[in-house]
Structure formats: structure tokens, C-alpha cells
Image (cartoon, rainbow over all chains, first blue to last red; front, side, top):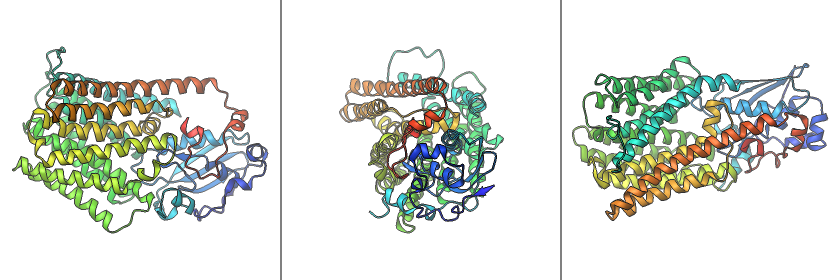
Length: 131
Length: 392
């Protein structure tokens, strides 16, 4: 099992998709790694905010097993938010299009609680923090 | 994953829709249209049917889904059935008692959520559930619906305002004055409602000041001010929200003017429908493309045509209040009311069509690598554009 080493540092992540050469085709051919999974999770958007779940700091940890199982530990901005199932479906749909992904497991966790300090600088700028 | 969720939760949603249709039917009677009432008090129960039977069922279902505890699912059917029982020959008090039970379960759900993560926004939403309970107690005590209608409005306003405060954190909401402002506004609303027990007019006027202050807070601090610059579903939601805040401010002014305590007449009609239709239903329209997939686990793709039912909702309410209430033109008031109901039916039809079309499209489309190739890559992964998969 390999873990994404960046799960403790959600802010200021570099443009992740640039790490996978060859664009979308490159992703399909690339080995299944936490970095690749993280790259794809930039495509899962909170519809209300128009910001992806990685930049929002919702993804706490992710791991990939040798037999193609992706395990994601993520949070929501509040336990009263009903979007957990919605985002799980979005993540599953996003990742299962990779041929090497056999299954996706999403676990909602509440420790540590989410706070706006977990948002990346890009997300903050997008939501007008500097205006 | 989709099937079991749909099978378990769709009947609860169906109960809410039955309450909605019954409430709309009662609304037509209240507008003075000659429709058959079937011998039931459909017009009298219009408010509780809409606020608790429909919206209360939806909100308690949404909260049960978030919490994921079996007991929390007792609230939605109790709310819908309680509101419907108030219509017929059920023993007196059974409907309001069921509504009280549903409200208490919703309060308990918020207590459970608060134990997971304590927050001001959850406390405000929870206070909304308390006002639901207070309304049911008043009803059980035999009060006229007009007396506790402001409590029903407060339930929905506090639910929405608490949720918006939660999202405002993502816009960099400062810790000091903005939170004090909102706390004072919520306090004024609750204090006014408490005062309305011995002094109805003065109490509702104070509550109206709380509504107005909350509307101004939302207009100043809500994240929709930023997300309205995005595209697709994100902009649609923001437009609906911002339009709703204008109506909440108008409602606050009307409450301050004292119209919300007159059980009947244009002023009473305007002061309540500015909240329930202008503010709350605009919020429902905004969030349906997100909440329906979250609750039923079926996609409800955003479509630009959703602006049609949103525009009709607000235009019809303007006709009802300005053309009708303000100028005393009964025909304009009636047309505004009927077109408001048309907007809600159009919303239901448009949403149902989007769901069915998406399911047909999805069942035909091969889930393959080719599908992934066709998908648009993220625009540097951080864009105000929601990718096709999210927008669907």
C-alpha cells in the first residue's frame, strides 16, 4: 500500500496534473499511484463553490493497494452537510474510469475537523479572500 | 450504491411531494379560486403543509442523510404525515403532535451533529428546529395558524442562514464583527418571536428587524457574491440565492410594518410569501441539483432552462406583492399566486425530466476508457468552471 505523502499539507500544492506527462492519455497509461489519484480528484468539484475537493482541503489521506483498490479518507466542511454520498459518487465515477482501478473506498472522517485554513491559496483566491 | 438509497428514500420524498401538492391545492383555495376542497380543511392547513409537510420533510431527510443514523429517519415521515393528518378526520391534535415529534427528532439530530463538531452555524440551524417545535406546541395548544406562522418562517430562515454561515467561512469570513452582527440578528428574531406570545404585533416587528438584519448580513457576507461570477450550476445557485436575499429584506420590512400579524389580507399574504416563496423556494430551486443527488443518489444535471422556473417564481411574486398587495388589484394578486404555483410545478417537471434523461443517457453510455479520454481535463485543476461530469 502506498500513501500520498502530501495529505498533511493541503495548501499550496503545485498544479498536480502537470506531474503526469501526456495529459489524459498519459494518465490512463501511467501506473496507479496516489499522486495520479490525487491529480484526478482535482476534477471532483463542489458544485456550490465551483472549487475542487483537493483545493478545498477535504481530502485527508489516500492510498492505493497493489491490486487496484483506492482508499480515500476525506471530510466535509460540517457533519450536517448531506453531500457525502454525492461526492462519493463523483469520486467513484471519476476514478473508476482508470483501467487499473478495481474498487474505490471513501471514508468520511471528522478528526481533525475541517477549517478554512485547509484551503489552498488558489481556492482562497478563487473565493475572493484577497478582495 | 444507487438502488438501495433510491428505494429507501424515494418514498419519503414522495410523501413530501404529496404534502406539497396538497398545500398548493390549499393555496389555490386561499387565492379565491373555485376548486373542490373535498370537504377537508385544505386552505387552513396550507401553511403547515408547505412549511413542515413539504419543506420540513425535505430538511429533516437531508439532515438524516448527513447524520446517517436510523432514528433520524423517523422525522421525515412524521412531518409529512403529521401535516396531512391535520386536514382530515384524525383525532384533534394528532397531526400537530406528530409534527412536534418530528421537530424533536430534528433537534436531536442537531445535538448529535454538534457532538461531532461544535459550531455556531450548526447551533443556528438547530435553533431553527427548536422554532419548528415551538410552532407545533402552539398549534397543539389551539392557537390560530396565523399566530405561529412567523415561527414556521423562522424555522426555515434559521436553517438557511446557519447553512450560509457555514459556507461563508470559505469566503474568509472574519471572526469578529460579522459573527456578532449575525448573532445579534438571530437573537432579535428569536427575542421577537418570544415577545410575540404576549404582544403579537410588537414581537413580530422586532422579529422583522432580525429578518432584515440577516438579509443584510447575507447580502454582505455570503459566498454567493463571489460564486455568481462562475459559470454553470455554480452561477445558477448564486443567482437564486442573491435574489432570495432581496425578498428576505422585503419580508423584514413588511414584518416591521406589522403586517405579518394580521391573519388575512394582502399585507399578511405579502409578509409571509416574501419569506416562503421569495427566499425559501428560491433556495430550494438553487439547491435541488445538489440535494436530490445527495439524498437519492441519482444525478440531477443542471440545465440552463432552470432559469425559467426561477425567473417565473420571482416575477410572479413581484406581481403578487406589487401589482396585487401594494395596489390592491385582486386580479393581479391572484394571477401572481397562481403563476407562483406554476413556477413550482415547472421546477418539479424540469427537475424530473433532467433526472430521467440523465439516467437514460447514463445507462446507454459505456463506462469505458474512451469515456475518460473524452472528458475535459481540469483547467489547472482549480477553475471556476465545473467540469462536465460535475455539471452533468
